[in-house]
Image 1 (cartoon, helix red, strand yellow):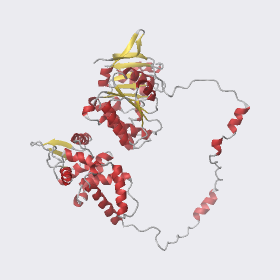
Image 2 (cartoon, one colour):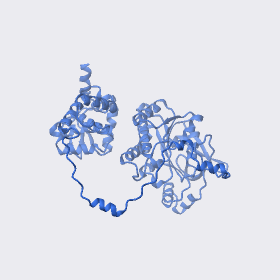
Image 3 (tube, helix red, strand yellow):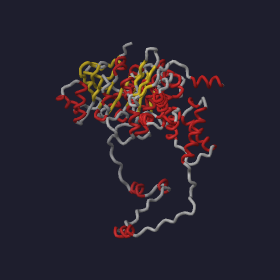
Length: 501
């Protein structure tokens, strides 16, 4: 079904129409400096297309939550755990509800992680739920930065991967990305390059003015026009809008953002009461601690004299303050607790948080000395333990390389990778889809096949099929491969646990 939505005016008396069905197939990039009208453009697009397509808005500033009152969008507060956001995203695709992910109140790294978890949940939805969704990401340079910034490499890698999946592989899953950015130079090129439709607004920096004409197929001498564009005026190009660069003036909107541009207004008259309000502390300030002035600096000569004095030898305590911990005994106790947890047939389908609490309780029961493992260290040790590698293999250089490769993967995928890597190192048959699904904590063999595809896309392994239809996984970095295995074979461990019950 062909649906044209009105974005405004292309010329006097002629509307600027956007083919919504073509937009879903070809994606859109919006660029313009702060104050050029990007958010207004996105709001116009969302309002006009709301009756026709499901929408998901990644909103870092909380400006689009007002869509809920007029168009029924569900506002999801991002101050939740990543796993909870992923599950909510899956239910959104199932029930086809338009949603606004409100990231307001989180710092940049938390916003990146929350957006990545939410987009990952939408991307990993079951095939039966791949309905068309217009995914609008405002301030996309925050989630797909061209270079590393102040955030951690892990947060940047996860966020950039989610944005790349949205723009590069999202079309087959019904996800149509619409990304808006203030600076083209700050946006990752592999994300921007996947858009076939463009709406370019006002920009002043030379590097952005050089990229904008390249994307629009214009002469570089025409780049000066982008400095003269007024607020709400854009140059459009793409199969969903126009085959030639087309000036567009964005039309009016029905809703408004909670934050508006500042307006000039006269200052109030200064009176004696005003001066009293400024210099007299209020009731709330009276309860705050008073900041004392810093102490006078110590003269340099006194500091040198103190440093030159011989330090007295510390007195040796008669007995150690803390009990000496036998690290070998502690490691053996932790390994024993890990084995007890993995022997439980239901452990594979429990969350890491639940298993971690069980681990802490069992460590107290066994009187394991020392500080308990942190959650991140527990997840890593659990992933290694699930691989079931023997002592001889664990001491080899090949297994050490496999452990190093696994560190580049998200925490929830490390266990699956180590299971298949262990099979390759030991020459065992390739694990079946059912076995890998159980290791991941899922009952879906289809999810296991997607994980194998993900590892292959990361160049960690190569999948081949022998003449008998059995699967072989080769690891170029480890110089080894698994023996042929039937991918459709049942999970022996799961079947044996069911029989025991």
